[in-house]
Image (cartoon, rainbow, N blue to C red):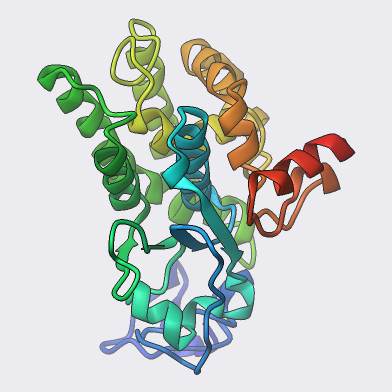
Length: 294
């Protein structure tokens, strides 16, 4: 904070009324604001497939591309999709047509033009809602048995409520904050490790999150927690002692080995090794070519 009067010998003292400081916010300060809505006019591209995805390969973005690749692998050809890149660092998520799909200005955002929806496509936002929408539409990757389905849904909603402590909490203060801060890092590391232990204990007795059946619960949880313990996020394996969570690590490697996961995780990815990146996907051939080049 730039106002020294807001500091005491023990740290920061909040003012009576908070005032936005555009220069305070670390790596994402240039795009973060305390207001919603479109900031500029921007049209979105449209491809030829039933589903038009606007996203980036963050954990939430990976959920949807993995789901779509899993559906295609199961033979659901109507799940074909175009994946358009949204550069969140450039503020694409605040463009007018993106905000029309997701008023919360977060990726991923999906338009469904199938089944007579061409004139008025169905918008779906929030990654968990997209997974549920697709699973119900194609009657896939959600258990038929009521009890097992309920278990899968419980873990899906667990992820939606828990992962912000990983990304916006631990990940932010460990990797993106302007400087290391002991209190928030300790606070969110404790919570991150507690969540890893929740998963590890559950997976000691279960092959997948809902038991013996792979489901949208696994697809939702793996991009956050699987990537974390495998060293694909925040470079925190040693710090978190991630390899000590043996059951979670077994599950993470098992999910990682799935072909659809390997395909989906590279879509809309713009960082890492070149063979890990596929900025946009407009047909299966795009992924095939990338895999062939490797």
